[in-house]
Amino acid sequence: AALRKSQRKRKHAISDDYVVYLQESDYDIGIKGDPLSFSQAIEGNDSEKWYDAMKEEIKSMDQNGVWELVELPDNCKRVDCKWVFKTKHDSTGNIERYKARLVAKGFSQKEGIDYNE
Image 1: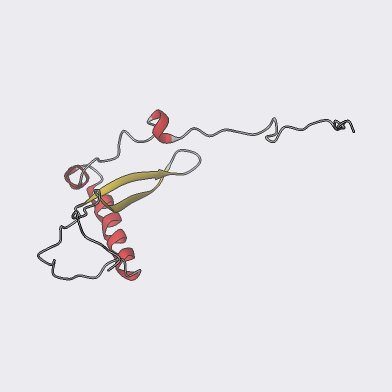
Image 2: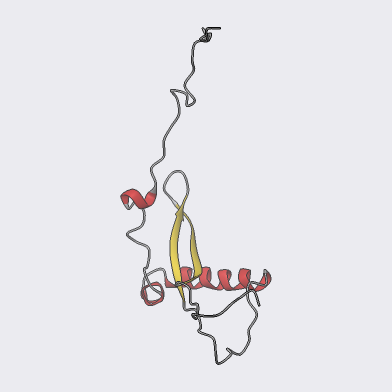
């Protein structure tokens, strides 16, 4: 038996009125003014706003039980962290808020450790 081919008109999955938004990181939109380090954040003109954003991040992490403060065992390496700063804008380009995130700088793992023990 021969295969039948559909006679229906195909529609595109994305309509013609679809709007594509550019990624900020692709074109450095709004990134130039953001501090790249803790030092830049606290020494700049908006230092109080960045400081408040950092306090808010620490408060949020504390409320969510993100960490538990303990002594570092001798056989472990600590994981460094850094602040990442981002100015958030509304749809018209006005500054909506200052966002600070505390993130791990990478990961550390000693060779030969079996974490399934």
